[in-house]
Length: 129
Image (cartoon, rainbow, N blue to C red):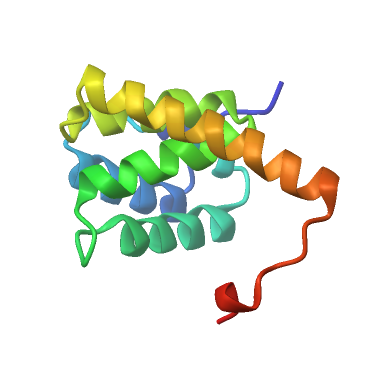
């Protein structure tokens, strides 16, 4: 079991990141992912800064980004990330119908990816970038 750093026992550089996360998300405490990362303050800071930048609204809206994060987390088999980003996607507006379609796409992609890899299908010239 990883050590989780709570706010009260955190050094100032960790508290600063925790404060930024709480302010950005409007939550009273950070989740366990951030508490686990806090055992290495530079990794905590770098990860929060990168995630904040990547997940900010841009050409893709927040709901789409959360649904993509959820799909990748499912495909990677990360139970924690699937739960966390599933909840975030729901907060961002993903409904049951969207979730159902997302599951269908993730499942279909997993199946066809495995088939293409098992068959060693060469990439069509038309698909080359």
